Amino acid sequence: MPVRPTAARPHLTVLLTLTVAATALTACGNSSGSSPDTVKVSFKQSTDNSIHVMDDYLADIKKQFEKKYPGKKVELVPIKAPDSEYYTKVQQMLRSPKTAPDLVYEDTFLINSDITSGYLKPLDPYLAKWPDWNQFIDTAKTAAKAEDGKTYGVPDGTDTRGLWFDKRIFKKAGLPTNWQPKNWDEVLAAARTIKQKVPGVTPLNVYTGKPAGERATMQGFEMLLYGTDDTNGGTTDPLYDKASKKWIAGSQGFKDALSFVETVYKEKLGPDVSDALDPNFAVTVNSDLLPQGKIGINLDGSWLPQAWLKGSGREWADWSKELGLAYMPTQHGQAPGKVSMSGGWTWAIPSKAGNPDLAFDFIKTMQTEANAKKWYIANSGISVRKDVAADPAYAKAQPGIKFFTDLVASTHYRPAYPAYPKVSTAIQEAMEGVTTGDASVDKAASGYDDALKDATDNQVVKK
Image (cartoon, rainbow, N blue to C red; front, side, top):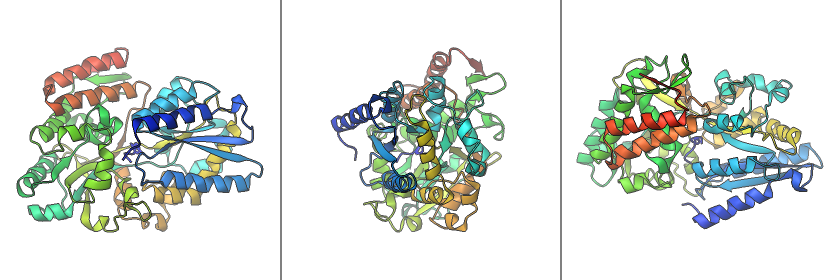
């Protein structure tokens, strides 16, 4: 989402957003007099009013659940907010039994922070008795596992990232419509050609800055950083050193990634800075700019087609004919040659939930093989269940699924330790500095190093 995660998936006014959040905060409390036979499910509702994928899916699961468990009820508690606001509202809800739901939708990048804060309940006793858990791939299982070795969430899929490019624009620019850049220079060269030959479009979109939140960090910066030489062929993490259990500062790869972002905005290859720093820009990109042929290359995630499906209100039946897909290359084309980042979301049970057993029954209903496949396809998600991934109907359900599923072999996962959200914010600040021109690459990198020390209690190693 996912970030769809992680997903960047028109907003209400701020007032209405806050009103919805306030309603959610006061509506969630099994210990405040609500029925022990009601399971309250809190989730992130899309801020794009044309996308109802999660709402429709959960409404169907609610019907199944209430039929399977007579006398039990499901109360859906949507929170309509951008990612960063959603995270804040969820943490507010989890602090008290009066506001904690029974089930909550957690981004994998934040889950360890909530685990450390004591907000979530370990699920191991439930998982041990649930045969379907054996169908989940190991990397997905570890996404919700804490440093204490316990598992605190059930993933509902993952995602990968790559380069979406407009074949219509490429044809006008004289670029190949089967484009696959081999390194960063070739990505920038294509963007420069588009700028020169196809005026009036944005050559290359790279999300950046604090308003974009984790989208800037993961779709933007980390897709660059994890392709630098600092990854040593993909064997080490350029953000976190597992051997010393410290965060990495002062790396050349970090500066190289910032330099790429600086180049995009300094040469006006990207969107106007005011647009790039609009927190709602991702919705505009997905719903308007891409379908209208206004962006040449978009560094983004696997979930984009969910906005274009039939019934979405913004149907784009020909997207797979008009858009091409290319993997993001490593900096110099060095092994393994391609880069992807993966995240995803999980369903977790708050430690202060009033009906945890009922909540896990709801998870089991969501995560039957049939329901999981239905969700992956509707959400343009990547399967984390082996049985669904092996189903030919899944691979053929939508253009692009095979491309993005194949990227799992080259993907990286964020070091989702408790300090990561603060580290991510520091990355966004560094990006914003070079995007606006307020900071040089060296100054922005130095500022990141200082912020990293504060964010990690000085658990930093110089590289």
